[in-house]
Length: 459
Image (cartoon, rainbow, N blue to C red):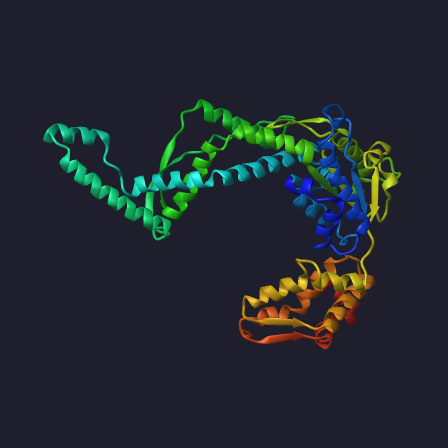
């Protein structure tokens, strides 16, 4: 979590500006929320537990940057981040998936992040061990029993010493070839652990998947470990052995303890489509279910303890960022208890022509940069005139007004349609420079813009 402690709210906003155009109010709110987490860590323990996270509701139409803000924020903080859709908890019957599963998924993510981090730290040691294991297979060492019998029969170990000397030289030759990746396709036999277990269905409040994994671990400890021989290439053997050795060197108890600690203090859950679980005034039908989901989410957001396969996880200090368009409802339609747990409300503005033109070129992952680089792999150089960018932006706005307003996502559909011909013929156009002018944009998209019914289906 190095970034979180280093970056001030202003620096966080500057980092978000590299990828998201506009929405200054939302960026400011999330920057403060993130900074407050590092401030909380510096408080005395008795006060630290009292400071609750200031959860945020982002209100705005689709395609204005709600999800992107939360995703980039999590990357900046290097924190466990999970995006879930509130509506999926209403899909199956009246109440869909177990609401607590979001905490279990977040804990899984956190533990896997740390396992990767610690595996990277022991990578050099693992590589050395794996190299020796591969060499033992390629150039088997002289066995001790053979050594003893040879010395006893000859009374001297001179022949054996010569053989060992030859083996040592051969081993070094193979070591050099291994390091130069010359033996990657060579087939060798290795012993691998047989991981098959009988499938037994267990139903429990924790959820089938989690119990199943624990059950497998229990069986693995009780039953003798079976191995089987597999013929694989040296490259595949290196991967299998690296995983095995990494598991031995990484202290999983430490990883799990730290993973849970990071979830509890740094976890971020992005609850998308929260407006879809807002019921109307109707007291029958699925609206009852929607309110039920709100009541299920409430204890998680308020602070409770959830059982996961790694242990108990407290949700008191997880930051929740909710988002919704709220077209046919408003945040005040949420149950009062849930409203109180989202004290910060930020409205994201709809994007216009000017923002679209900036989005096309300014962000580090700008669409025009993406298409230019993609086609450069085929030897095609794309050049966009300023007038073409203006034209694309105005056409995106026009289609959004005439059909459904899907925000910045409209630029993706328009760009794909605009460059479909060039993308298709790219291998034949290798070495050429393609200039995209305003005239070219109008030409390519004329039929669709004029025909409203057609644009509904294509754009």
